[in-house]
Amino acid sequence: MPYQPDSRRWLALAALVLTSLAVGFDVTILNLALPSMAEDLRADNAQLQWFVTVYTLVFAAGMIPAGVLGDRFGRKRTLLVALTIFGISSLAAAYAPSTGIFIVARAVLGLGAALIMPTMLALIPTMFTEKERPKAIGTLAGASMLAFPIGPILGGWLLNHFWWGSVFLINIPVVVLAFLAVAAWLLESQRKRGRGVDAGGVVLSSVALTALTYGLIEIGERGWADVAVFGPILGGIAALALFMVWERRASEPLVDLSLFINARFTVGTALATVVNFTMFGVLFVLPQYFQANLGTDAMGSSLRLLPLIAGMLIGMSAAGRLSRMIGPKLAAGLGFVLLTGGLFWGATTSMGGGTVLAAAWTAVYGLGLGCALPTVMDAALGALSPGNAGVGAAVNQSIRTLGGSFGAAILGSILTSAYRAAVPQQARESVFAGLAAARSAGSATLEHTVRSAFVHGLDLVLATSGGLGLLGALVALAWLPGAPERPRPSTTPAQRVHVPDH
Image (cartoon, rainbow, N blue to C red; front, side, top):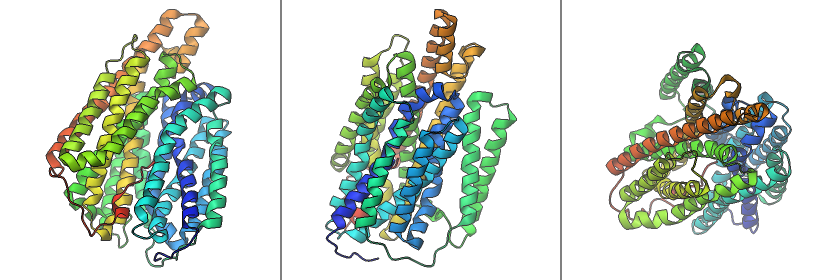
Protein backbone atom coordinates (compact mmCIF):
# COMPACT_ATOMS: atom_id res chain seq x y z
CA MET A 1 0.00 0.00 0.00
CA PRO A 2 1.62 3.33 -1.01
CA TYR A 3 1.92 6.15 1.46
CA GLN A 4 -1.33 8.10 1.87
CA PRO A 5 -1.23 11.41 3.75
CA ASP A 6 -3.60 11.37 6.69
CA SER A 7 -3.88 13.86 9.54
CA ARG A 8 -4.26 10.98 12.02
CA ARG A 9 -0.90 9.33 11.24
CA TRP A 10 0.86 10.78 14.29
CA LEU A 11 -2.05 9.70 16.48
CA ALA A 12 -1.73 6.26 14.89
CA LEU A 13 1.97 6.31 15.79
CA ALA A 14 0.96 6.96 19.40
CA ALA A 15 -1.09 3.75 19.20
CA LEU A 16 1.97 1.87 17.97
CA VAL A 17 4.05 3.35 20.81
CA LEU A 18 1.56 1.99 23.34
CA THR A 19 1.69 -1.38 21.60
CA SER A 20 5.48 -1.40 21.76
CA LEU A 21 5.38 -0.62 25.48
CA ALA A 22 2.95 -3.48 26.08
CA VAL A 23 5.40 -5.95 24.55
CA GLY A 24 8.48 -4.33 26.10
CA PHE A 25 7.36 -4.50 29.72
CA ASP A 26 7.47 -8.30 29.67
CA VAL A 27 11.26 -8.56 29.30
CA THR A 28 12.66 -7.38 32.64
CA ILE A 29 9.48 -7.64 34.70
CA LEU A 30 9.27 -11.44 34.49
CA ASN A 31 12.88 -11.90 35.61
CA LEU A 32 12.14 -9.85 38.72
CA ALA A 33 9.11 -12.02 39.48
CA LEU A 34 10.99 -15.34 39.23
CA PRO A 35 11.98 -15.53 42.93
CA SER A 36 8.38 -14.99 44.07
CA MET A 37 7.07 -17.47 41.50
CA ALA A 38 9.62 -20.08 42.58
CA GLU A 39 8.12 -19.94 46.08
CA ASP A 40 4.41 -19.53 45.29
CA LEU A 41 4.22 -22.03 42.40
CA ARG A 42 6.94 -24.29 43.85
CA ALA A 43 8.80 -24.03 40.55
CA ASP A 44 12.19 -25.69 40.20
CA ASN A 45 15.06 -24.27 38.16
CA ALA A 46 14.01 -26.04 34.95
CA GLN A 47 10.49 -24.61 35.19
CA LEU A 48 11.88 -21.13 35.84
CA GLN A 49 13.93 -21.49 32.65
CA TRP A 50 10.79 -22.46 30.74
CA PHE A 51 9.00 -19.39 32.10
CA VAL A 52 11.59 -17.26 30.28
CA THR A 53 12.39 -19.34 27.20
CA VAL A 54 8.91 -20.38 26.07
CA TYR A 55 7.96 -16.75 25.41
CA THR A 56 11.02 -15.97 23.29
CA LEU A 57 10.83 -19.37 21.60
CA VAL A 58 7.29 -18.81 20.31
CA PHE A 59 8.06 -15.15 19.63
CA ALA A 60 11.03 -16.04 17.41
CA ALA A 61 9.38 -18.98 15.65
CA GLY A 62 6.22 -17.01 14.89
CA MET A 63 7.69 -13.71 13.79
CA ILE A 64 8.35 -14.49 10.12
CA PRO A 65 5.01 -16.22 9.32
CA ALA A 66 3.26 -13.45 11.28
CA GLY A 67 4.52 -10.91 8.76
CA VAL A 68 2.90 -12.93 5.97
CA LEU A 69 -0.41 -12.98 7.87
CA GLY A 70 -0.33 -9.20 8.24
CA ASP A 71 0.14 -8.80 4.50
CA ARG A 72 -2.63 -11.25 3.67
CA PHE A 73 -5.38 -10.30 6.15
CA GLY A 74 -4.60 -6.61 6.70
CA ARG A 75 -2.18 -5.17 9.23
CA LYS A 76 -4.73 -3.25 11.29
CA ARG A 77 -6.92 -6.35 11.64
CA THR A 78 -3.89 -8.50 12.49
CA LEU A 79 -2.71 -5.99 15.09
CA LEU A 80 -6.14 -5.88 16.78
CA VAL A 81 -6.26 -9.68 16.94
CA ALA A 82 -2.69 -9.77 18.28
CA LEU A 83 -3.49 -7.24 21.02
CA THR A 84 -6.54 -9.29 22.02
CA ILE A 85 -4.39 -12.43 22.27
CA PHE A 86 -1.76 -10.53 24.24
CA GLY A 87 -4.31 -9.15 26.70
CA ILE A 88 -6.14 -12.46 27.31
CA SER A 89 -2.90 -14.41 27.77
CA SER A 90 -1.63 -11.73 30.19
CA LEU A 91 -4.73 -12.34 32.32
CA ALA A 92 -4.21 -16.10 32.12
CA ALA A 93 -0.56 -15.73 33.17
CA ALA A 94 -1.45 -13.45 36.09
CA TYR A 95 -3.90 -15.93 37.58
CA ALA A 96 -2.17 -19.18 36.58
CA PRO A 97 -2.61 -21.69 39.45
CA SER A 98 0.25 -23.97 38.39
CA THR A 99 3.55 -23.96 36.51
CA GLY A 100 2.08 -25.88 33.55
CA ILE A 101 -0.76 -23.41 32.99
CA PHE A 102 1.62 -20.48 33.37
CA ILE A 103 3.99 -21.91 30.74
CA VAL A 104 1.08 -22.34 28.31
CA ALA A 105 -0.07 -18.77 29.00
CA ARG A 106 3.45 -17.46 28.37
CA ALA A 107 3.59 -19.38 25.08
CA VAL A 108 0.35 -17.73 23.92
CA LEU A 109 1.74 -14.38 25.10
CA GLY A 110 4.75 -15.01 22.85
CA LEU A 111 2.38 -15.70 19.95
CA GLY A 112 0.70 -12.35 20.51
CA ALA A 113 4.07 -10.59 20.57
CA ALA A 114 5.12 -12.43 17.38
CA LEU A 115 2.04 -11.08 15.62
CA ILE A 116 2.52 -7.57 16.99
CA MET A 117 6.14 -6.74 16.22
CA PRO A 118 6.52 -7.40 12.44
CA THR A 119 3.01 -6.08 11.76
CA MET A 120 3.75 -2.87 13.64
CA LEU A 121 7.09 -2.30 11.89
CA ALA A 122 5.60 -2.99 8.45
CA LEU A 123 3.05 -0.21 8.98
CA ILE A 124 5.60 2.60 9.21
CA PRO A 125 6.46 2.85 5.47
CA THR A 126 2.74 2.98 4.59
CA MET A 127 2.01 5.80 7.06
CA PHE A 128 4.85 8.28 6.61
CA THR A 129 6.83 9.94 3.87
CA GLU A 130 10.51 9.14 3.44
CA LYS A 131 11.34 12.42 5.20
CA GLU A 132 9.05 11.62 8.15
CA ARG A 133 10.13 7.98 8.59
CA PRO A 134 13.32 8.58 10.63
CA LYS A 135 11.35 10.59 13.19
CA ALA A 136 8.58 7.98 13.30
CA ILE A 137 10.98 5.07 13.64
CA GLY A 138 13.05 6.95 16.23
CA THR A 139 9.90 7.53 18.28
CA LEU A 140 9.00 3.85 18.10
CA ALA A 141 12.55 2.77 18.95
CA GLY A 142 12.57 5.21 21.88
CA ALA A 143 9.37 3.66 23.23
CA SER A 144 10.94 0.20 22.98
CA MET A 145 13.98 1.35 24.95
CA LEU A 146 11.84 3.26 27.46
CA ALA A 147 10.28 -0.04 28.52
CA PHE A 148 13.68 -1.21 29.84
CA PRO A 149 14.10 1.35 32.66
CA ILE A 150 10.36 1.69 33.39
CA GLY A 151 9.75 -2.07 33.53
CA PRO A 152 12.07 -2.94 36.44
CA ILE A 153 11.05 0.02 38.59
CA LEU A 154 7.34 -0.48 38.03
CA GLY A 155 7.67 -4.24 38.38
CA GLY A 156 9.66 -3.92 41.60
CA TRP A 157 7.04 -1.61 43.11
CA LEU A 158 4.22 -3.96 42.13
CA LEU A 159 6.01 -7.01 43.54
CA ASN A 160 6.61 -5.20 46.83
CA HIS A 161 2.91 -4.36 47.21
CA PHE A 162 1.04 -7.14 45.40
CA TRP A 163 1.46 -10.76 44.33
CA TRP A 164 3.61 -11.79 41.36
CA GLY A 165 0.64 -11.89 38.96
CA SER A 166 0.32 -8.11 39.18
CA VAL A 167 3.32 -7.71 36.83
CA PHE A 168 1.22 -9.25 34.05
CA LEU A 169 -1.91 -7.26 34.88
CA ILE A 170 0.05 -4.11 34.02
CA ASN A 171 -0.29 -5.18 30.39
CA ILE A 172 -4.08 -4.92 30.50
CA PRO A 173 -4.62 -1.11 30.63
CA VAL A 174 -1.80 -0.61 28.11
CA VAL A 175 -3.34 -3.19 25.75
CA VAL A 176 -6.83 -1.70 26.11
CA LEU A 177 -5.56 1.81 25.32
CA ALA A 178 -3.50 0.49 22.40
CA PHE A 179 -6.50 -1.46 21.05
CA LEU A 180 -8.78 1.60 21.17
CA ALA A 181 -6.10 3.81 19.60
CA VAL A 182 -5.36 1.34 16.79
CA ALA A 183 -9.08 0.88 16.10
CA ALA A 184 -9.70 4.65 16.00
CA TRP A 185 -6.64 6.04 14.27
CA LEU A 186 -4.99 3.38 12.16
CA LEU A 187 -5.90 2.94 8.49
CA GLU A 188 -6.24 -0.61 7.19
CA SER A 189 -3.52 -1.73 4.79
CA GLN A 190 -4.27 -3.21 1.41
CA ARG A 191 -4.44 -7.00 1.52
CA LYS A 192 -1.91 -8.84 -0.60
CA ARG A 193 -2.60 -12.06 -2.43
CA GLY A 194 -0.03 -14.52 -3.60
CA ARG A 195 2.53 -15.65 -1.06
CA GLY A 196 1.33 -18.46 1.15
CA VAL A 197 2.49 -19.59 4.57
CA ASP A 198 5.22 -22.24 4.45
CA ALA A 199 3.41 -24.73 6.73
CA GLY A 200 6.15 -27.35 6.43
CA GLY A 201 8.80 -24.82 7.39
CA VAL A 202 6.76 -23.60 10.37
CA VAL A 203 6.21 -27.15 11.68
CA LEU A 204 9.81 -28.31 11.21
CA SER A 205 11.33 -25.17 12.71
CA SER A 206 8.95 -25.27 15.69
CA VAL A 207 9.70 -28.95 16.36
CA ALA A 208 13.46 -28.37 16.07
CA LEU A 209 13.52 -25.34 18.37
CA THR A 210 11.23 -26.85 21.00
CA ALA A 211 13.15 -30.16 21.11
CA LEU A 212 16.52 -28.42 21.35
CA THR A 213 15.32 -26.07 24.08
CA TYR A 214 13.80 -28.92 26.09
CA GLY A 215 16.99 -30.96 25.88
CA LEU A 216 19.21 -28.02 26.82
CA ILE A 217 17.08 -27.16 29.86
CA GLU A 218 17.01 -30.78 31.03
CA ILE A 219 20.83 -30.95 31.03
CA GLY A 220 20.83 -29.07 34.33
CA GLU A 221 18.29 -31.44 35.86
CA ARG A 222 19.41 -34.83 34.48
CA GLY A 223 22.91 -34.52 33.04
CA TRP A 224 24.08 -35.48 29.56
CA ALA A 225 23.74 -39.25 30.02
CA ASP A 226 19.95 -39.29 30.34
CA VAL A 227 17.88 -40.21 27.28
CA ALA A 228 15.54 -37.32 28.12
CA VAL A 229 18.45 -34.99 27.27
CA PHE A 230 20.29 -36.37 24.27
CA GLY A 231 17.10 -37.79 22.68
CA PRO A 232 15.39 -34.39 22.24
CA ILE A 233 18.70 -32.73 21.29
CA LEU A 234 19.39 -35.30 18.55
CA GLY A 235 15.77 -35.07 17.43
CA GLY A 236 16.00 -31.28 17.32
CA ILE A 237 19.19 -31.42 15.26
CA ALA A 238 17.55 -33.87 12.84
CA ALA A 239 14.47 -31.64 12.51
CA LEU A 240 16.72 -28.64 11.92
CA ALA A 241 18.56 -30.51 9.14
CA LEU A 242 15.22 -31.45 7.55
CA PHE A 243 14.13 -27.81 7.83
CA MET A 244 17.22 -26.69 5.89
CA VAL A 245 16.53 -29.26 3.15
CA TRP A 246 12.85 -28.28 3.01
CA GLU A 247 13.62 -24.57 2.75
CA ARG A 248 16.00 -25.15 -0.15
CA ARG A 249 13.26 -26.93 -2.10
CA ALA A 250 10.18 -24.92 -1.04
CA SER A 251 8.72 -22.61 -3.68
CA GLU A 252 7.85 -20.02 -1.00
CA PRO A 253 10.28 -20.74 1.88
CA LEU A 254 9.77 -19.45 5.39
CA VAL A 255 13.44 -18.38 5.51
CA ASP A 256 15.34 -17.25 2.43
CA LEU A 257 18.60 -19.17 2.95
CA SER A 258 20.31 -17.20 0.17
CA LEU A 259 20.55 -14.30 2.65
CA PHE A 260 23.36 -16.15 4.41
CA ILE A 261 25.54 -16.11 1.29
CA ASN A 262 26.24 -12.50 2.26
CA ALA A 263 29.11 -12.84 4.76
CA ARG A 264 28.51 -9.48 6.43
CA PHE A 265 24.85 -10.27 7.02
CA THR A 266 25.74 -13.68 8.44
CA VAL A 267 28.54 -12.39 10.68
CA GLY A 268 26.53 -9.38 11.86
CA THR A 269 23.53 -11.58 12.69
CA ALA A 270 25.74 -14.12 14.51
CA LEU A 271 27.37 -11.38 16.60
CA ALA A 272 24.01 -9.82 17.49
CA THR A 273 22.82 -13.30 18.54
CA VAL A 274 25.84 -13.65 20.83
CA VAL A 275 24.91 -10.35 22.51
CA ASN A 276 21.33 -11.53 23.04
CA PHE A 277 22.56 -14.90 24.32
CA THR A 278 24.58 -13.28 27.09
CA MET A 279 21.92 -10.67 27.92
CA PHE A 280 19.10 -13.14 28.50
CA GLY A 281 21.38 -15.34 30.62
CA VAL A 282 22.46 -12.38 32.75
CA LEU A 283 18.88 -11.16 33.21
CA PHE A 284 17.84 -14.69 34.22
CA VAL A 285 20.39 -15.09 37.02
CA LEU A 286 20.80 -11.54 38.38
CA PRO A 287 17.39 -11.01 40.09
CA GLN A 288 17.73 -14.43 41.73
CA TYR A 289 21.22 -13.49 42.97
CA PHE A 290 20.03 -10.14 44.32
CA GLN A 291 17.15 -11.66 46.27
CA ALA A 292 18.72 -14.96 47.36
CA ASN A 293 22.25 -13.78 48.21
CA LEU A 294 22.02 -10.05 48.85
CA GLY A 295 18.67 -10.33 50.62
CA THR A 296 16.93 -7.60 48.61
CA ASP A 297 13.23 -7.37 47.94
CA ALA A 298 11.77 -7.05 44.43
CA MET A 299 12.11 -3.26 44.38
CA GLY A 300 15.71 -3.51 45.53
CA SER A 301 16.41 -5.98 42.73
CA SER A 302 14.85 -3.69 40.15
CA LEU A 303 16.97 -0.74 41.27
CA ARG A 304 20.11 -2.89 41.08
CA LEU A 305 19.40 -3.55 37.40
CA LEU A 306 19.49 0.16 36.60
CA PRO A 307 23.32 0.40 36.22
CA LEU A 308 23.13 -2.25 33.49
CA ILE A 309 20.28 -0.45 31.75
CA ALA A 310 21.95 2.96 32.11
CA GLY A 311 25.16 1.60 30.62
CA MET A 312 23.21 0.06 27.76
CA LEU A 313 21.38 3.30 26.96
CA ILE A 314 24.63 5.31 27.03
CA GLY A 315 26.32 2.78 24.77
CA MET A 316 23.44 2.77 22.30
CA SER A 317 23.36 6.56 22.12
CA ALA A 318 27.10 6.65 21.34
CA ALA A 319 27.29 3.61 19.04
CA GLY A 320 26.43 5.38 15.77
CA ARG A 321 28.85 8.25 16.35
CA LEU A 322 31.58 5.84 17.39
CA SER A 323 31.08 3.69 14.30
CA ARG A 324 31.34 6.76 12.04
CA MET A 325 34.53 7.89 13.77
CA ILE A 326 36.55 4.66 13.98
CA GLY A 327 34.63 2.24 11.76
CA PRO A 328 32.32 -0.72 12.55
CA LYS A 329 35.21 -3.14 13.18
CA LEU A 330 36.76 -1.15 16.02
CA ALA A 331 33.43 0.10 17.39
CA ALA A 332 31.99 -3.42 17.64
CA GLY A 333 35.34 -4.76 18.89
CA LEU A 334 35.40 -2.13 21.65
CA GLY A 335 31.82 -3.02 22.58
CA PHE A 336 32.63 -6.72 22.84
CA VAL A 337 35.81 -6.00 24.86
CA LEU A 338 33.78 -3.96 27.38
CA LEU A 339 31.03 -6.58 27.43
CA THR A 340 33.56 -9.37 27.98
CA GLY A 341 35.47 -7.43 30.62
CA GLY A 342 32.27 -6.76 32.56
CA LEU A 343 31.29 -10.44 32.47
CA PHE A 344 34.71 -11.70 33.58
CA TRP A 345 34.71 -9.07 36.34
CA GLY A 346 31.31 -10.30 37.45
CA ALA A 347 32.65 -13.87 37.45
CA THR A 348 34.90 -12.91 40.40
CA THR A 349 31.82 -12.50 42.64
CA SER A 350 32.28 -14.22 45.99
CA MET A 351 30.14 -14.62 49.08
CA GLY A 352 31.52 -11.27 50.21
CA GLY A 353 30.61 -9.53 46.95
CA GLY A 354 27.88 -6.96 47.31
CA THR A 355 25.91 -4.23 45.59
CA VAL A 356 28.93 -2.08 44.64
CA LEU A 357 30.64 -4.91 42.74
CA ALA A 358 27.37 -5.87 41.02
CA ALA A 359 26.68 -2.26 39.99
CA ALA A 360 30.21 -1.81 38.64
CA TRP A 361 30.43 -4.90 36.45
CA THR A 362 26.83 -4.66 35.18
CA ALA A 363 27.40 -1.02 34.16
CA VAL A 364 30.51 -2.00 32.17
CA TYR A 365 28.65 -4.95 30.65
CA GLY A 366 25.68 -2.76 29.71
CA LEU A 367 27.96 -0.14 28.13
CA GLY A 368 29.61 -2.81 25.98
CA LEU A 369 26.25 -4.32 25.05
CA GLY A 370 24.95 -0.91 24.01
CA CYS A 371 28.02 -0.22 21.84
CA ALA A 372 28.14 -3.64 20.20
CA LEU A 373 24.50 -4.41 19.37
CA PRO A 374 23.56 -1.41 17.15
CA THR A 375 26.92 -1.61 15.36
CA VAL A 376 26.65 -5.28 14.39
CA MET A 377 22.95 -4.82 13.57
CA ASP A 378 23.79 -2.01 11.16
CA ALA A 379 26.57 -4.11 9.64
CA ALA A 380 24.13 -6.97 9.04
CA LEU A 381 21.15 -5.01 7.71
CA GLY A 382 23.27 -2.45 5.86
CA ALA A 383 24.73 -5.26 3.74
CA LEU A 384 21.29 -6.08 2.29
CA SER A 385 19.80 -4.64 -0.86
CA PRO A 386 16.55 -2.64 -0.63
CA GLY A 387 14.75 -5.57 -2.28
CA ASN A 388 15.49 -8.06 0.50
CA ALA A 389 15.89 -5.67 3.45
CA GLY A 390 12.44 -6.53 4.85
CA VAL A 391 12.82 -10.31 4.92
CA GLY A 392 16.45 -9.93 6.03
CA ALA A 393 15.41 -7.82 9.02
CA ALA A 394 12.74 -10.38 9.99
CA VAL A 395 15.23 -13.27 9.76
CA ASN A 396 17.83 -11.32 11.73
CA GLN A 397 15.36 -10.42 14.46
CA SER A 398 14.05 -13.97 14.69
CA ILE A 399 17.54 -15.48 15.02
CA ARG A 400 18.55 -12.94 17.67
CA THR A 401 15.43 -13.71 19.66
CA LEU A 402 16.30 -17.41 19.50
CA GLY A 403 19.76 -16.50 20.78
CA GLY A 404 18.09 -15.05 23.87
CA SER A 405 15.96 -18.15 24.32
CA PHE A 406 18.94 -20.48 24.07
CA GLY A 407 20.94 -18.16 26.34
CA ALA A 408 18.42 -18.57 29.15
CA ALA A 409 18.23 -22.33 28.51
CA ILE A 410 21.95 -23.11 28.28
CA LEU A 411 23.23 -20.69 30.90
CA GLY A 412 20.34 -21.62 33.18
CA SER A 413 21.36 -25.29 32.87
CA ILE A 414 24.96 -24.40 33.77
CA LEU A 415 23.68 -22.63 36.87
CA THR A 416 21.41 -25.55 37.78
CA SER A 417 24.14 -28.19 37.33
CA ALA A 418 26.65 -26.28 39.45
CA TYR A 419 24.10 -25.54 42.16
CA ARG A 420 22.64 -29.05 42.42
CA ALA A 421 26.10 -30.64 42.56
CA ALA A 422 27.02 -28.63 45.65
CA VAL A 423 23.90 -28.87 47.86
CA PRO A 424 22.18 -31.74 49.68
CA GLN A 425 19.02 -33.38 48.36
CA GLN A 426 16.53 -31.27 50.31
CA ALA A 427 17.91 -28.05 48.78
CA ARG A 428 18.23 -29.07 45.12
CA GLU A 429 14.90 -27.82 43.74
CA SER A 430 16.05 -24.18 43.61
CA VAL A 431 18.07 -21.70 45.65
CA PHE A 432 14.84 -20.38 47.22
CA ALA A 433 13.69 -23.88 48.16
CA GLY A 434 17.15 -24.46 49.64
CA LEU A 435 16.98 -21.29 51.72
CA ALA A 436 13.48 -22.23 52.92
CA ALA A 437 14.76 -25.69 53.94
CA ALA A 438 17.69 -24.12 55.79
CA ARG A 439 15.43 -21.74 57.71
CA SER A 440 12.98 -24.53 58.50
CA ALA A 441 15.82 -26.65 59.91
CA GLY A 442 17.44 -23.66 61.61
CA SER A 443 20.72 -24.59 59.93
CA ALA A 444 23.13 -21.73 59.27
CA THR A 445 25.53 -24.23 57.69
CA LEU A 446 22.97 -25.33 55.09
CA GLU A 447 22.04 -21.70 54.37
CA HIS A 448 25.73 -20.86 53.77
CA THR A 449 26.10 -23.91 51.52
CA VAL A 450 23.05 -22.91 49.45
CA ARG A 451 24.20 -19.32 48.98
CA SER A 452 27.76 -20.39 48.18
CA ALA A 453 26.56 -22.94 45.61
CA PHE A 454 24.43 -20.34 43.87
CA VAL A 455 27.29 -17.81 43.74
CA HIS A 456 29.54 -20.52 42.25
CA GLY A 457 26.88 -21.21 39.60
CA LEU A 458 26.56 -17.48 38.90
CA ASP A 459 30.32 -17.19 38.37
CA LEU A 460 30.29 -20.11 35.91
CA VAL A 461 27.44 -18.52 33.96
CA LEU A 462 29.26 -15.19 33.71
CA ALA A 463 32.60 -16.81 32.83
CA THR A 464 30.93 -18.84 30.07
CA SER A 465 29.25 -15.72 28.73
CA GLY A 466 32.55 -13.86 28.93
CA GLY A 467 34.27 -16.56 26.88
CA LEU A 468 31.57 -16.25 24.23
CA GLY A 469 31.97 -12.45 24.30
CA LEU A 470 35.72 -12.82 23.75
CA LEU A 471 35.04 -15.01 20.72
CA GLY A 472 32.62 -12.33 19.48
CA ALA A 473 35.35 -9.67 19.78
CA LEU A 474 37.75 -11.75 17.70
CA VAL A 475 35.11 -12.41 15.02
CA ALA A 476 34.16 -8.71 14.88
CA LEU A 477 37.78 -7.65 14.44
CA ALA A 478 38.33 -10.29 11.77
CA TRP A 479 35.18 -9.92 9.66
CA LEU A 480 33.48 -6.55 10.07
CA PRO A 481 34.44 -3.66 7.74
CA GLY A 482 37.21 -1.47 9.08
CA ALA A 483 36.57 1.91 7.44
CA PRO A 484 33.64 4.15 8.43
CA GLU A 485 30.88 3.74 5.85
CA ARG A 486 29.51 6.52 3.71
CA PRO A 487 25.71 6.70 3.54
CA ARG A 488 24.22 4.64 0.72
CA PRO A 489 21.57 6.70 -1.14
CA SER A 490 19.78 3.56 -2.30
CA THR A 491 18.91 2.55 1.27
CA THR A 492 16.27 4.52 3.12
CA PRO A 493 16.52 5.24 6.84
CA ALA A 494 13.50 3.04 7.41
CA GLN A 495 15.45 0.08 6.10
CA ARG A 496 18.51 0.82 8.24
CA VAL A 497 17.03 1.67 11.63
CA HIS A 498 16.29 -1.24 13.94
CA VAL A 499 13.71 -1.39 16.68
CA PRO A 500 15.03 -3.66 19.47
CA ASP A 501 13.12 -6.90 19.95
CA HIS A 502 11.72 -8.14 23.26
